[in-house]
Amino acid sequence: MAAKALSFDVGDYVVYPKHGVGRVVELQSTEIAGASLDLYVLRFEKERMTLRVPVNKADSVGMRKLSSDKTMKDALETLKGKPKVKRTMWSRRAQEYEAKINSGDLTSIAEVTRDLFRADDQPEQSYSERQIFEAASSRLARELAAMEQVDEPTALVKILEILNKAAAIHNKAKEAVA
Image (cartoon, rainbow, N blue to C red; front, side, top):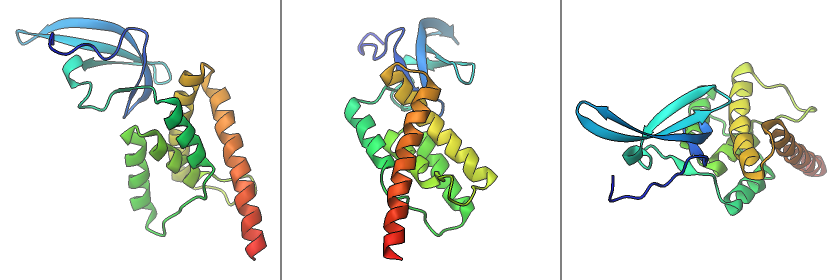
């Protein structure tokens, strides 16, 4: 432990891949089976969950600081792209989408959000598509909210505005071709 400096301080926002944005609320030392163990105590407000992560395992589980401004900008730019929907079975696509969301990679999460977004004039989503879309957009919104120091609904509105503008552009392009 002494060889490696702590990567995160109390009060830092961090991203834990499987759970999204949390905050380091405490650094704890505990003894388990006679061995001393240092832990980050993370609090995830949305899930009302507390998670203890061993300091020496933080990197291997993919825990990271909030994304850089450039990474967030790239992710928001990804939202403006044309949705890419593979013609594979839904169950396989759903697994791929879940894996992207749980990777914690902001651009991958933005891809899922973009690909599953439906504008008001488009056909409705199935229940499972909607669930995955909401999980991805919520994860993206929480990181954007933490970075811009706004609340999650405000960040979600910004994301949906980008998606609606992009959908309008892509629909006009589709109509021009037809």
